[in-house]
Length: 151
Image (cartoon, rainbow, N blue to C red):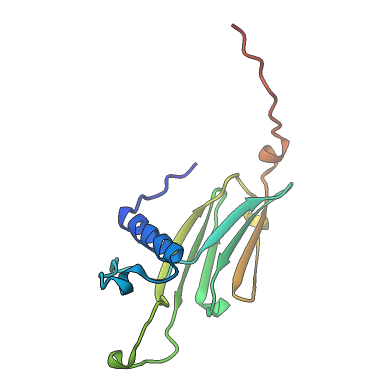
């Protein structure tokens, strides 16, 4: 299992967003509170799951051209890099609100099982990148069994 980096400021921003959603709007905007500026760029949301014989990774990449995304797969993780570019420049004094994120991104996604990286395939449709990789043979053959605890 790969270690994931802990980002405490990211968790605070995530909590603020959840509170905003529960209250039906932006808490910072209503109470004139500053939002957390974490200096972050675009970070795609992902979901990872397994089927009977493969690991599937889906990443939301709305507005991206597949040519602007680089996908690398290893036995135990997927590496996504790319850049979401702003379509047009708008003068800052004309902005009312901007919640969209742009910029370079890098994301290492740990996989729950080892895969055959040489047989993985990636598709891109409607802003969603889907990566499918067959499970490594050793993983497919492993069958757990319940152990009785002796006392």
